Length: 453
Image (cartoon, rainbow, N blue to C red; front, top):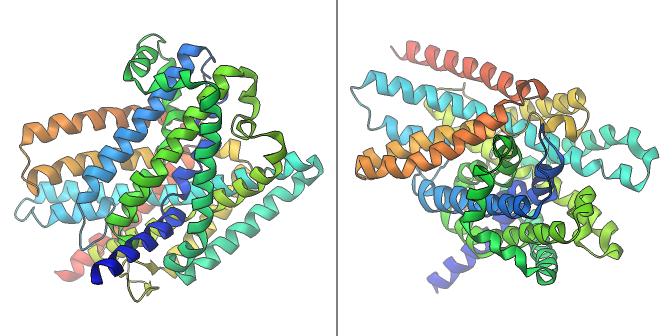
């Protein structure tokens, strides 16, 4: 009986995780694949070789970055059930006694990584909600003046609702995202059936040929390709809210298949009708369903903000425990799951910064330039700390750990450098905020240590 109850609990948490953990990565199909061919400094031409090559990159990024790196390897590392970059740092700090230089590097990595995550916690809600509300302009151009006020109202409501806890929010958001992922998969399958040729893109040779035959173009394209895996770091940071099993179950059994079907469906449609690039996602569906999909996609993109907000609460509690942040009120929102928390001060700070971002950039297109630098920086730091945990804690052979880790380092380094060229197009905002937060946390940590002595 206890086993059955435990299984029921895992499935319940997996459903809640769909709404809390996978909202960000689950709404990437709305813009990620299309952005490669229509946005950025150098859009990719829509030839068959390019479409299959980019689709192959999407496939292998989802498999290697999310499934292999985070779900299969990194999520094995937790500190008292908590995940995220600070958890990795704490694991290593406990093994660094008598090594002040290593300890200093670990603390620096934790500070920067946490600051990067907060930066992502500001950009994701701003761009998600703005991109959703901008759909009002499709309904009627006269509604354009209402976009900013409506977006700000939704954001205030979203952050106000955090006090009720991720479990209760997940119960509300989970079923909605369950329907969303079913729709993603169904739309993809509908288009794949009409052009099954697109399934060839699962072969890595197509990604290899795209990278090797197009000069610097693939480098610029990576800045958009990485949009398909944004949310992976939040997946790890949110581990304390639900535990690893529900998160892994939801990813392997549901989220990954739905995302792959949808991206392959978009590739199939683009191969068949290059003119569909004007609105690739919505044109996957029959015209009679367009209005309904716009409404549901709007709701889904609002949900997408939740993953980084919940992750920010987890990162904050760990930062307080380490002395990186001053003591502040942490509210336990669940009697069953210790990781489900709400931090009012951080919630207010994120809300203020998100509102500032919306007022400053005014559109999701402008915010796109700011998106990616912070999250890819965190992913890169996770690589180095993860390799260290594998060697020091899991006792992997150093050569094996480094040979395996170098693949992810090179991949995330390419993502980071590709996004870094967007610095003057908005990337300065999350980086500037991350620098300020790093300095603040360093000063708080320095004061706490001096008081201790």
